[in-house]
Structures are given as structure tokens and as C-alpha cells.
Length: 268
Ligand SMILES: Nc1ncnc2c1ncn2[C@@H]1O[C@H](COP(=O)(O)OP(=O)(O)OP(=O)(O)O)[C@@H](O)[C@H]1O
Image (cartoon, rainbow, N blue to C red):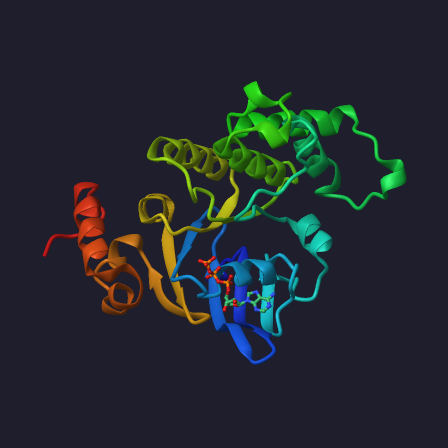
């Protein structure tokens, strides 16, 4: 008999408290290699805090996180990045006065090895890596533009490119399409699909339901730091607790008809 495959990411009874406030509470879930897990839930549900905990910026106060079987729960953020987890942020992150390409080169340089600032030198291999990451998200044409002057869509794609330049096994994306138009959302969707096709596992947090359900292989809905729902996107609209707490009846009906049109949910 073959042994069951080790999940790429495994969270067991993970918790994060800020004093008396429990932002993430006893949360357990796995993400398989190559999968896209979408995370939704009301404001304040603990979604971003979960990313802080996984990426080590704000370590867990309970539980255990494993990447391909290795315990990463107590590692520093740079060690977690070097182990293969990269992330994007809800708000713009990056160096405004550098060009887009230079921003991605910083990710490529620091993303996989710990090198001290005095030795900072962008070599040919790093440049190549950065240009590949820019191409992956379709940003070649803006490579030499100053980051602070890029439109919102391109800044979001740039965060994805900088993260991809660290060569992650797992990419965490925090609200990648917040504030974008429908057409811009389609462009980000295309970039996410390209990243998935490159073999990268993805967890994304998103309020835009179309984006969440069209891209995700599995969806997890959080509420009060806990898991309210975990399953196929097609089952989301039929889950009473999800409809009551998060979607509301109107949004649920709209989503259901949209998913029926896409063949993702059964009638009745
Ligand atoms: N550094 C912190 N110190 C104290 N409380 C915090 C801190 N970070 C988050 N919280 C609290 O933890 C809870 C969860 O917040 P979090 O930002 O993770 O929610 P979220 O699901 O990402 O919400 P949103 O959809 O609005 O981004 C909130 O009550 C928030 O105020």
C-alpha cells in the first residue's frame, strides 16, 4: 500500500491571540501541492491574521504549521520565505522610487538565500529570474517604469511578480483584486492561472466571490477565527451557515445562478 502524500501545507490547531482577542482559533486544514485554496469570510474573521501567522510576520500562539512535513511554526519570516512561502499584501508593498524591474530583482536576490546588504549585487542570474517573474504576470512592458507611478492593477501584478521571483512552492495572496474593475480582475485571474500552471500552490483571500469560486479548487470560509465551511466552491451556495453569516440570501442566489451557468453547481 502506498503511503498517503504529505500535504504541501498543513495547519494543525493553529491559534493567534492578541491579548484577550482570539483572531485565529484552533484552525486545522491542509493544502495539497498544485491546489488553489480560496479563503473568504466577513471582515475581521481572521483571514489576514492567518497569513501573518503562516508567513511568520506575527507568529502563532498555538498549534503547528508544516511545509512539506517540516515544522515552520517558529521560523523567522525570512527563513519561511527561503523555505518556499511567499506572499502578497492587501495594500501596496514595494519600493515606490525604484522601477518595477528593480523591485522584482530585490525579491529575486533576497528570496532564496540570506545575503547581507554589503554584498548586495544584482548578477545576471538574478536579473534573468526577475525578468521571468515579470513576464509570468504580463508586466514586461512596464518593467522600466517607476513603481510609485504605476496604475493600481500593475502594482498588484508587481507584488505577484516580486513574490514569484523568490521561487516559492506556496504563494499566499491577500485580496489580489480588491478595488479592481471586472476587466482588470480578468487579467489577474489569467496571471493566477499562469502561476498555477507553473506548478505553484496558491492560497488566496478574496471578497470578490466570482474570483474566489472561479479560481479555487477548494474554498474555506472563516468566521470569528474559526472554519465555518470547507469544501468545493459549488457547495458553498447551498451551505446554510455560509449564506446566513457571510453571503446573505441575495448574494447567494446571484452566485448560484452564475455558478449554474458555469456548470459548477447542480440545479434544485
Ligand atoms: N496586530 C494586531 N493587534 C491586535 N488585534 C489585531 C491585530 N491584527 C488583527 N487584529 C484583530 O484580529 C481580528 C482579525 O483581523 P484580520 O485582519 O485577520 O481579519 P480579516 O478576516 O483579514 O478581515 P478583512 O476582510 O477586513 O481584511 C480583528 O478583530 C482585528 O482587529
